[in-house]
Image (cartoon, rainbow, N blue to C red; front, top):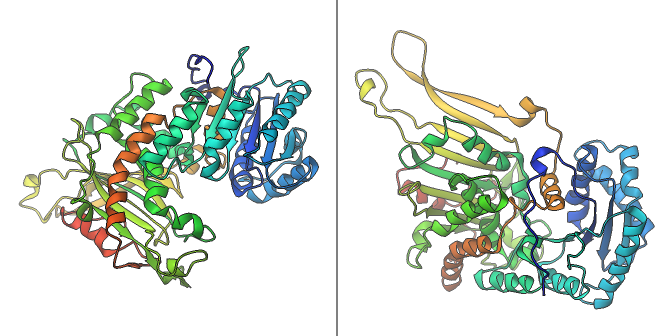
Length: 511
């Protein structure tokens, strides 16, 4: 059973503190996540003097390899996947602190060996028994690894040291499995030792949503149903499923994107101001939003939730195949690669303001954005001019690929006749702050080392998210799609997605 829960740690990351001395243990260290994201993020933290001097990395995987080979492999890969030029001098820091052990994740002997290795590292590197475990593995191993770590007493917190576990997504595949996994983990470690990670929340624009809303006096007073007509959230990818066909066949776009990425964006956009930036105050408000979302009834799903699957098409002038002919995909697959839906948030601030969400693969453009569409002002003043109608103002939070914020408004076009033209004000992070390139994991890893869980999902947040998604999963399971594939690769999705907004007299911003 877990040891007594320690007090919350203050948000030192916000003040530029380096992480606490610790050993970072990566389960699944020979996989793509380590070489593409984790090591480049750790390198960037070190380059910015945000890693402690007393720090080490242990890779654990079922691949037989020596520590020397592991170091060489990562040294070669970092030059390929880093977001900036790698300095040999800076890389020496990691070369002196990397070790590797092979083992079976289900074998208790692996964890006893790991325990001995960590004790040796504590003595050699001066790390004080603080361990951060990262599960960069198949979701089927999440619960097993936590149980084995607890069995080896590697999650036990005594003598002032801490032990934390980072759980990758997907966290369950429906409400029942997510709650079962939560229960399995809670039987071994405390909630404040559990960090359910979503790399979207590490992106600067996502983190800036609260600062933008609550740090400026002229937007938050308008952030309600008196002034906002509706909200659109788009997460579009140009890539297909590539070599992940087997994973995608068991998952689909709804499970893969909505309970984590997209609902995280909804909660940040719609949350009430917290009483402080304390992690629990922030997470309380985000969870309240998800609980306030009106679940779709089975009979409403066909009207307010759209699914799609891409067929053959053209991207960047080149032909691409349809989903059903991708590797490891059933030629008659009924798995969705596109989802669009309309949600209602039943609280005082957002009553009557629809949230339209969409995500898909093989779309026309790689794009993640939150579009706030304001209500159009009365046109009475302009009734005797050439102005026939007034456009809605838009506030766009661009999350990728070009992080920034833009605002559109109307202005008079010079001349003797009153006519209006649209004006766009654009702010880009790179242009203004000249920020260093990042992979999106830097802030999240640093927060884990400092014990600040504000950007991570709590168990009740996971539960609330799946309660939104589960009715749609059930309805789609009961009535398989009959029109797949229903959108061409390189398009903006199926026609039914446009109809979703058209019924309300609206349209997608990009379509």
